[in-house]
Amino acid sequence: MNNDNTAYDGAHHTAYEDGTTGGARTGAAPLGKGRGRGGTPRRGRRTAVATLAAVALTVSLAACGGDSLEDGDSGGDAKKGSLVVGAAGFTEAKVLAQLYKQILDDAGFDASVKSVENREIYEPELEKGSIDVVPEYAATLAEFLNTAKNGPDAEPVASSDVAATVAALEKLAEPRGLKVLPAGKAVDQNAFAVSAEFAKEHGLKTLSDLGKSGEKVKIAAGDECEVRPFCAPGLKKTYGIDVTGVDPKGVGTVQSKQAVKNGQDQLVLTTTTDATLDSFGLVLLEDDKKLQNADNILPVVNAKDAGGKEIADALAKLTDALTTDDLVELNRKVDSERQKEADVAKDYLESKGLLKK
Image (cartoon, rainbow, N blue to C red):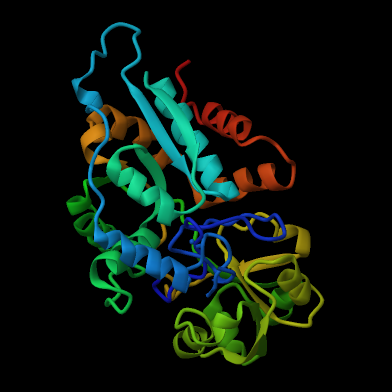
């Protein structure tokens, strides 16, 4: 998103340079690299390019797409219709796309995954109907569409309130022929981590604890963190944290995490689904005052071609089950253990009893 609130975005996100994941939403990116879900890493991190691409969408996108799946014959064991699931170019998006594909296959549809680098590319395809469903990030997509409709200086519509953010997203998505399905508990948004040793020494569990401790901290992040309201300025204003500066090593990069592990820096900007924190001896501090926007994960479908109840019901089973901790583990299996996204998704769905076959 282009909202200053995000650190990432690349399609919400894109893979980090070091191979770690994160969410990221094109439109959202951690602050730091340029996604996308403040120095925006992958997820896209909202960059000027993302803003221009979003604005370009307003030029228009003619709807095409095939016949609605609801009009097809779904009797017997016949497939109910084909569906294309869009997957952005980072680990988490690929895993989510596989989860969507497999649960839709299990519901009787013939689903396939189409890899698309970022939101600027896949969102128009979703509107046209060449892609039927995409796993999305509520706040990031809301701001992406907000910018597309109202320009780069549009008043933000996303907030830390999930219900309000989804409501704003629905209002922006409907005129474009998109249907927003309910959001779940899983969320991939900007987050801050310290070394476990530092947290223990100062009794830290939340960002409020860090502010009350009076400890001076240097943040390892993208250089945008200096000015993004949800990074250094927000930490100072909302939590009273004594930020002495920003070490521009990128969002969630190996270099940033290593700097905090070594004590060179005290705080690192990453995301809530970063699967590599343990290996660096880092722990997240809770955003207890809700500084970050609600980037809860939710399905967005082409209303004409994939807006039926059976599709919504199938995806709802997954949405209701998936948690942020689940995402962290799924990302870890792909990035650290080098397992295939399809295998990781299948194992998860079976472990939760979400597949009938």
